[in-house]
Length: 152
Image (cartoon, rainbow, N blue to C red):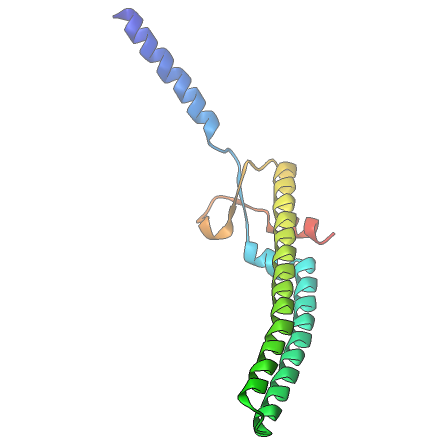
């Protein structure tokens, strides 16, 4: 009986010790919306994306004018279909390339942000970093130091 009681006491003591090590002592948070709004690299990428979209929209407009002119000139349906196919053959790969480039750049930005959050947390001795939206109270705001690190 004493061995059983000793075993239970040791188990409780060690499992309690393990459990106390499992939770974080210092919790921080980052306002990701603020980071996305104020990160200069994202602002630059947004500007570039808008310029490329404007150029792409011009091409779409040119093709639409060409097709409308053919329709108003009463061109045969076969010619209209050919024009639409040419438009799609030219613009669809360009649209796909723009989307792929945008997704790739966003993934790079996300990696930059994660790296900045991680290194900032390590610098300030923060064990766990959460998004601001899940914190009610009691955590350290790391948003400003993360943005400072990103915008260097």
